[in-house]
Length: 117
Image (cartoon, rainbow, N blue to C red; front, top):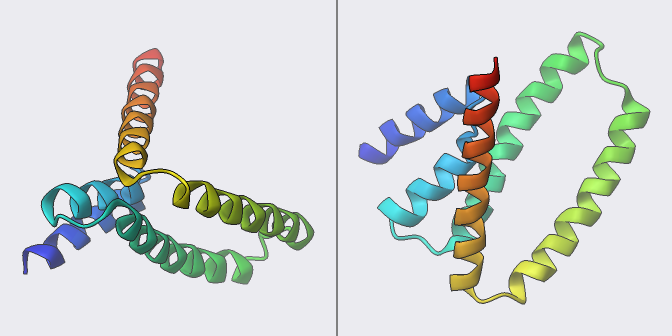
């Protein structure tokens, strides 16, 4: 039941634009004891579900530039492949450290930009 409420909270925060994917990975790794790569994989499933619903909504509103979306999808696919190859070549402890620094840096940038406004 706690997992359900954590999922609802993370999804709600993601809906408000607060990096729900990063929160999901943190929850899975630090609270549930999941492996870093497995948590990131589940995060991708979480993201794909959210992206699919957004795609349907924006397609109905005719707000998608399909040619640009196709180019971005190809580039994203190539980047995801290269990232997965790089991640599999790195020790899980190193990957966890890199992810932690990335999350802290992203959080600091958000806080600093918020203070500027």
